[in-house]
Image (cartoon, rainbow, N blue to C red; front, side, top):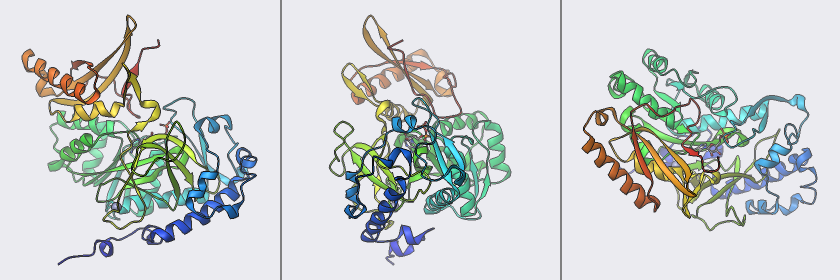
Length: 439
Ligand code: ADP
Ligand code: ZN
């Protein structure tokens, strides 16, 4: 019997997930006006928004008349310049992990925390997580928003929540066994590392654990990493995107169709612009993601330039939600490096490497300058099994990696095969690129 997918889908927040596109856009206009009205109370926006008349905001596209906000603006107005309520109304602050320089602070009122937890619960429910599931949160707690963000969302949904934090792999595995963990949140590089630990212990998660869902996000990763993680752990992997400036996780999330990340357009107004001209790119084209908060009361941000590069995927999702979908984030515009005149993203290297079975679960890219010539070396861990094999076999693998990287990147890197588990690891986001060219 044919079933209507839309009718079958159940929602955490039907009012905001299952509305029509027109209904969604009308809500956006209301909320955008309210956001501008509120933002005017913040020292940073007071003058910048003075000229804007609320009546002129008649469609979501009218956001284009408002000024952009950059990470540098957040730094300049640090710490309180973006608050539009008295300080005693705030109950939490997070500081971004500072992957790309000086940190920025984000403040939340009680209501903001409530809205955020609800958005997170919506994401988790959409992927099939339910009360009765045991959720283990294997990401750093503390200032990193991924920890507490997921934590409160999972509790709001009603899962038994284990705040295990990042690292200490053996204890993680023990917790998974003892409490029959079914759902996990983990950053991609740690998911790969934990695979190695499980393999060393002779543990097969498909046989020995009860996992069924994994949320991977907070850093760029390729479709190839998704496939590896799904095959090894026996889970469905859902991509999770967010950034501290927009609360944290819960900005965009994959549904059970795993075909791009629904961006919650009732909470965030989305634009994709050309990073050089700041003009909107045609639909479907890659550009910089720009977001405006629509539900944040204490610290609204207008047209925030995320520096993250992605595109809006064309077409509707079979799940029936009107919220448009973002393509997998390719990386930050700052991650891109230029070698011999060619633009390269680390994720392109990952794509090639992770599709080769003999390649292990860690790699890094080292850029250097020798005699005024830029060089690129890709250091690749091989699997345990391969490492003990003969030199001729290793040589063949190295040649294959070099050839495939060359055809993807159009430059020829040096490839260095290294022992399993020998590259540096860290508990937070992976450092994939070491640039020594200007040392
Ligand atoms: P920091 O900017 O200091 O790393 P955040 O923890 O707020 O602090 O990181 C947010 C950033 O992480 C995003 O702007 C994006 O670059 C990256 N990110 C988050 N989720 C994903 C994802 N699913 N895919 C790719 N990149 C992601
Ligand atoms: Zn969907």
